[in-house]
Image 1 (cartoon, rainbow, N blue to C red):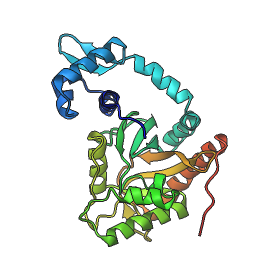
Image 2: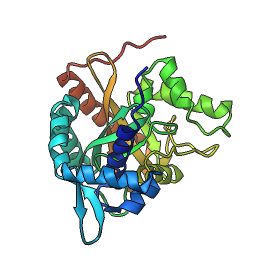
Image 3: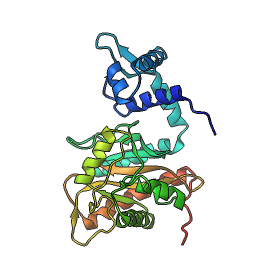
Image 4: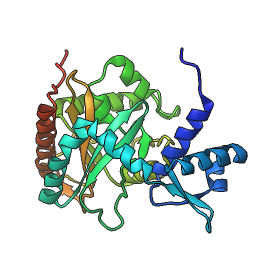
Length: 287
């Protein structure tokens, strides 16, 4: 087993926290409070990161922001992440076609990390920025987990609110089966949307679903109209793994049930094109 490295863990926590709030500047006291760090320890870390260019310190306001050295790291990481690079032209095309935002994200450990975005956010919509993180926990992340094995699915379900019962767990399992069958996920807005926004703003805190609230849409019912939060489709890697997922967000008003597949199938086609360019393959369905 690898030996723990608390200093490195704390440094990663600082960078992740600031990446999740890229437009904000933080004081030493705010970072120490938000991340439960000793102020003396945090001060040493911030000085080191600032000296290396990973953070910028405003000497008058005594605040810290993300620094230019991270741009080089980000560009290098993007170059070594072919799925995200290959997805960009498809994301732009989808954004222009539907006048929506298109977001690419990946599941890393127990988090969903936003990698790229195309399109202009609508007023009062979800503010999604590359680098933001949210927990890979129900009801979020069905498109990442649907093609996983039992162990990964059980791990995902282990993050469910303890107050929820077996019926709720079965509903989540049913949602995963629907995503596998369709090849895409559909999530509703309303209270579910508010939970997603809160999760984006408070990265690392698992959202908890209320009983009876349908966030992952399982059935598209006849003439029903839906307030859609997002539609997601997977991009598969060479081993059949979900390398990343593409999401359409920023839907306005309500959408008729018969209209949802038009968006979803176009998004799925784009994800399949990226999968092909990546020389990926969809996993073989098992009974």
